Each structure stands twice: as structure tokens, then as C-alpha cells.
Length: 101
Image (cartoon, rainbow, N blue to C red; front, side, top):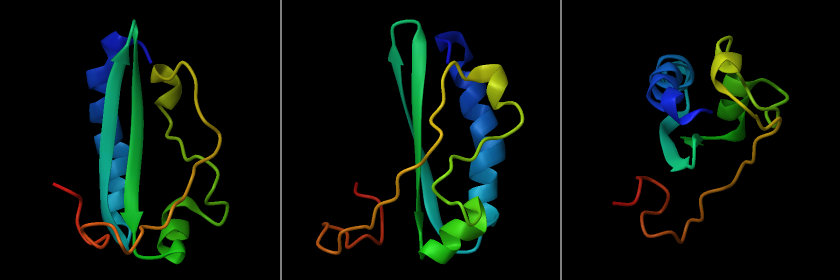
């Protein structure tokens, strides 16, 4: 998105996607990363879930399809059509229970 829209988009994502994450049983938390690259700002959001069934409760059966909200077109200059899912490695320092400090 345009760099000038970065703060407004972050607020929008908190009010849409992050609010929906919090309301979905099985969500363990969500984070938003951002960086400015020239005149653009890039965002990555990631979330932790109890199970694939919990992910599907949020995203639907086609859980690898990216989920967008009505005003996304106002902000985004490009978009991914799919999402990636990973398992938390049980050998990670926190055992996957808490974000690393």
C-alpha cells in the first residue's frame, strides 16, 4: 500500500481481521509486522491457533485462500491469493506456548 496509508490500514486490520481472530475459538493470538519500502508499506499478519479446525472456523474450508475484507481494495496495491500455514516446532524455546521475548 502507499506509505501514507500505513497507519490507517493498521487500524483497519485491527478493527476487522484482528477483532475476528479474537472472537474465533482456538485463536492463540495474532501479530502484525510492517516495514516501509520506498513509497510503500508492506504488512504481514500471522496468527497462532489450537488446531487446523480452529483455522477453518476462521477462514472456512478453503483455509489456504487469503481472506480479505470489504475496504481492502481501498488500501492494497497488490495482494496474495493464498496463505501459508506452519506447525510450531515443539523444540522452539517457548514450546510454542508464548511469543518469544
